[in-house]
Image 1 (cartoon, rainbow, N blue to C red):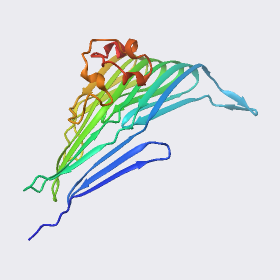
Image 2: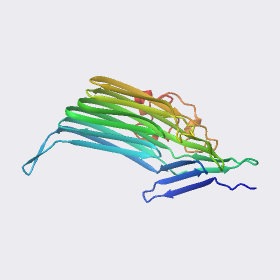
Image 3: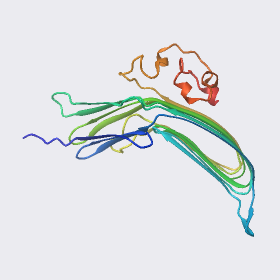
Image 4: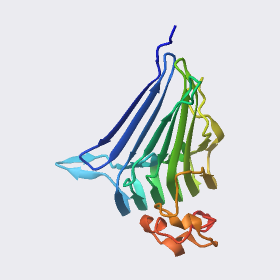
Length: 310
């Protein structure tokens, strides 16, 4: 009696009107499924902002409008993410922000489906080179009734973040750099179930924060495993932490996360030949400046990002 093939593969490659490229893949069996979604575009984006003044009530048509300041930023490109949010009541306020983003989606994503003879195991393998580079810096000072400030930096399932809440006095300096070089992924399945999967981006996340806080400070981070947990249907943490502080504190933190995976399809003619060269330690700002595109036109990567984020 011949068994019926129940494993199915669905792969969609779409280009939107905005020029972004999407790949959505689902591998399904009769008991479980595995999903991969990727999105990128060819972009060079630079943003800077400077605000200084007093948040005060405003008289309008004989009415006094309550003073309030609100700022929200969110940038996402191929699962490299930046989110910032600030809300403040009456007080003295100053902030400066800079964000640089570069990404490229010119290369095709290679997808291979194999089934070794004599087995019922299917294997789907992905090789993607949609690189992304994002740098961000922020300076903030506030004195007044109350301010809440949040930030989140994420890079392909890794993240760091801070929540600074209910502060009458707050001073903050933060910087981050994130890059994604490439992504490899593999999933194995039979008719009955997903056997295993690996999500393997070659990436880096560096983050530093220094703050004087007078309220609540929540600091968190997470670094995920490339191995898919079939039972939980997720990628478990290999490093994570959460901290909470009440009161008046001077806090500083520097976090770096890095992962590197081989890509057997890479050659010296690929988009980043500098990886094959002999590197010496250099300052990120000296070598590449503020332009994210320069990072990917380099002669070699810096071996240590501490001069940039430290």
